[in-house]
Image (tube, rainbow over all chains, first blue to last red; front, side, top):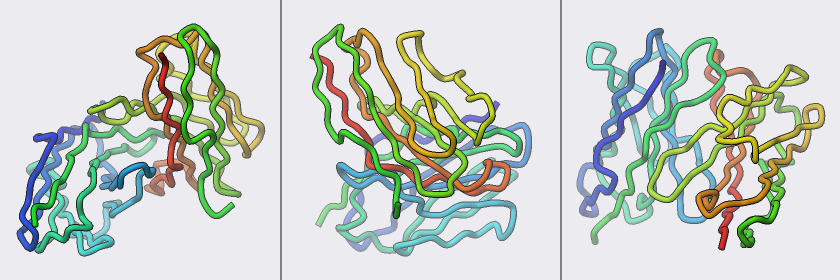
Length: 113
Length: 116
């Protein structure tokens, strides 16, 4: 069965500092992996996805994530945090043949001026 | 439409009442999903519709929950005899293709349900 682990429900980062959100997954078959962002009072918006092409995936707003099969990880990074990055971030996984996404519990990112 | 539309955006209801939540997916999206997001929790899968196939209802938490979808258009999620633990944001998403193609979802803004 597929599942996702995101540690640390709240993450504080200084403006201009590196943003690093960790995501580990379990899957019995090669997965599809996603990061979504949720701004206050809005739905989830796709940041980026891994679908078995390049292992380093670039997304919107300067975010990127690297798929590491040996570590079963898909960590999200951004070199320099901006105030507008304050939001909740969800990692999700699906398996080929499974028609649903399994989501992590999310990371609430707070950017400190 | 341009995006996934959900209504109402907010709903306050008394315990024991029935509520109906609506989702209007992106035109042409064959797959439609309902998720529940409780405060401080991840997204909990509820139900999945794909075209005219029988829906995957395996995530519905109790028989008080039901959902319908007419063809590839609007879906309604109904909660009967609401309880306080039903308070959550209910999110709808649609996609062009089944997940094995890695399509990803487009989410609506959700309905915030508060049971008092």
